[in-house]
Structure formats: structure tokens, C-alpha cells
Image 1 (cartoon, rainbow, N blue to C red):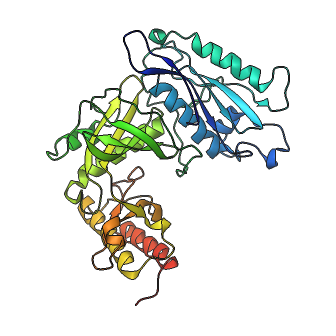
Image 2 (cartoon, one colour):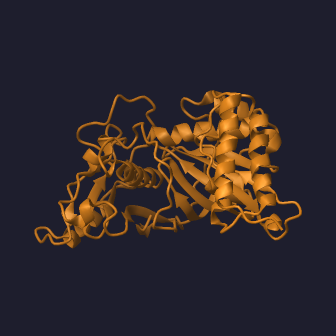
Length: 378
């Protein structure tokens, strides 16, 4: 998030309370034809899969909705400088799962101006009684978004994650307890049977955002004193389903944790927000996508890592999103060609319903990506 308005906490509390949040995109990101036409209706863009801004609208609205639920806020805004939209997530339990989006306020508007609209928004946020904000209960089954909201908890968000403009989020020490995700009991029940994987009752400590996508946010943080990468997923159904797949994948791949996939430290949820988290030990390294060229030894290590994931997951296990961004080269290995080691990450699209032929296809796709960045031998 690029803007967070906070006020002092209640008497006896040291923490500040977040009351309003804003996401600011680069100029033109949420406009069509370079901003030469009227600003789009974000609700329409969300609902219409053929709309040119459909992917962007779903990602941005879901991100704002996620933080409004996580921090129990009722007001926020989205802006790309030339246009600004106000958003509201009502406090009452009947409408708490809806995100209401205003028509766009253009930068040239005077009655009211954007500044006046934002001032009104902040005043409304200040008037919210935090004790009156209902607990959000994620809804997993829906027939479609409602006419008067953007349906931020609906399905169909299948775009690939992209990093956002912002890279900072306030620390959170909100307690969290590991619970079975709604509609994903088989994933977490199998995870809980793995003795080396544990859940910490104090929850993760978030430091700053690494990147953000349609299913959730990736944060740098600390989990039980261990440097960690923490995924926040939900409360929309796409995020909760990605959480189910991630948790299940780490359970299936438990023998390869710390070898070719990161070590899972714990899973849990923020019950007041309906947001799940998954924490893994942070790998000191960088994605292969950041390398100008990839030496043959590193390419071979990446292929071995994927093949080990396939073997550990079984004949039908597929990663589902084979990209160089999802393969990390360990830092120690990066300085030496002797024994490079690669880690496969991001199992939010993984499945167990594939075939051996599809596994081989994933390996071929990876080899093709590596070949485009190959470095000459010797």
C-alpha cells in the first residue's frame, strides 16, 4: 500500500490504528488510450473478462480489499493521479464482504475536487468506531459479483502476479492461530501430519512488501525468530484457493524442504480479516530471471530441482507456473560454479491432477527458458 492513515490506538494500547488505505499506481495504468478517454468504471472492468483493464482492476481492487479486511478498515482509495476512485467496505456484517467503488474523480474536477473527496473520505474514516467493524467471514461459493459492488471475494482471478509500485507495509504483530482453511481441510490436515512443520501461535512479524499479485502479497518478515518470506493470501476466493494449493504442495514435498524447495515454517490465518498466511524460511539468493546469463551448471541445477519436485510430488504433480522468476539460485552457489543449488518457489498454481507427459512438458518449457539465457561453456 502506498498510503496508510493511522491514528493513536485506544487508551492503554501502544499500537497505532490504521483507518484508511490508498493504492497509487503510475499515471495511465488504470486509464485507456493514454488517458484521452473518460476514466473507466472499475466495477465494470472487474466484471467483464474481455475488458482491457480486467486483469489490472481485479488485482488492484483485491489488494485494497485484502488490506481493508486485514486492518479492519472501512475506507480507502485507488488513484493513478489523473483519476481517483473512493472505496468503502461497510462495517456491518451484512455488507462486510462487499467492496463499494465510486465513480472516478478526475484531476480536473472542481465540484467536488479530488482533494475535497479525499478529505471527506478521511473524515468518514475517522468517524468509524473500530469496535463496530464486523469480523469478515470469507465466502467460498458465489454465483457472481453483485451489481452494486466489485465482488472482491469472487472467483476467476487467474492473471499472473506482478510487482506493484509500492514496496512498504507497516509491521504487524497481530496474533494468529493456525486453523484449517475453509474448503481446504484435506490440504491442511495432511500438512499437520508432518512433524517437522509447525505453526507458531504468535504469528508472523511483517517487515516490508516484496511484491504483490492477484492472489496475495509476498512479504519479508520474521517467523518465530527466523528470517522468512510470508505470503498473505485471501480473503477473496482466489487467494484462499492459492493458499490451499501452496499448503498442500509443501505437505506433499516435505522431504524436499530445505533441499530444492524452501522450508515451511508455519501456516495460519488472521481470523478478523479472513487472510491466510504461509511462512517459509528465506533463501539467501536471487531469481534466475535476474541473471543476465545462466551458466550451464546453474541451468542443470534448475532442471534437477524441478525434476526432484516432480518425483517427490508423484506422477501427477505439476508446478503449474514454470518461470525463471520462480526459481532461486542460492547465494553461496552463485559465487561458485562447483555445486550450484536452485530452489523452486511459488506453488499457488500447483496441482496433483496432471500426468507424467505433462511433467515432461514442464521440464521442456524450463529448458527452453534457460536456453534463451544460456552462457557459453568454459
